[in-house]
Amino acid sequence: MMSTTTWLSLVFFTSYGYLLAQEAIPFKIQNEFYIYGDALVIGNNVLSKDAKEPFNDPDLTNDDIDMVFVDVDDDVSTFSSSSANLILPLNHTKIKYAALYWSATYSYEQGFRKESDGQFLFQGKRDNKRNKINNIKLKTPNGRYTDVIGSVIFDGARDRAFTLNSPYVCMADVTKLLKNSEIINGEYMVANVVATQGFVSGEALRVGYFMLFTKPPQKILNI
Image (tube, rainbow, N blue to C red; front, side, top):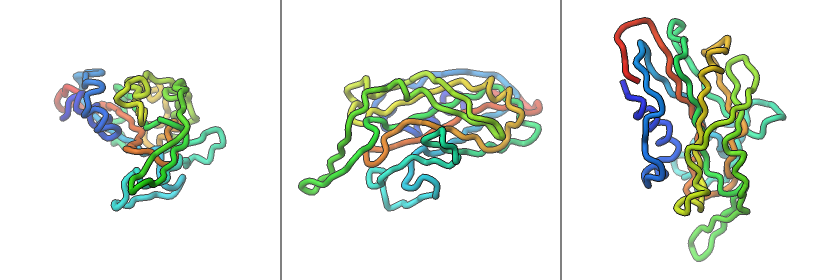
């Protein structure tokens, strides 16, 4: 079983491997539990080539795709929405801890790309308003959207080494929200994650969830 640090590394590495490789923020333990249980991570992307249709072309990099917000909830109150399914055995659905992590490249609202002397140049109007990056919405299975205000773990706009793409990482403890949910298994929806649409260099955008759940006693684990 992986430790807490390893699981958090998985969530962050999926989102910003290059960011952490430059040691902008060191790994550290957020929470630690001794439980009869296990851990699970679910998540999805927030940008794609199409708002609703799946897209996968291994011959293209993110830099080559004119990205738009994924928006699959048919809700006019959200400008983006991404879903992921949680499936736990029926006797494993007691939540011990649930954290929501999200990250994006957000240097400007709309990015453009042009070619000059055989090289691509990426441009856009800078968005200096960072008060929106930690405000999103979360919907549990058969529930309604709940406003979530997270903590900003890292904001590249405040670090000269990362201002070009201005990536950010946020997290929120959503344990109480899931414990109060009547249904645990099913589709979770995250909405209104801000990010740069269009073209941007070195693009990597994800939204991720980190959840712990308990199960009938077998042996105690350190998670």
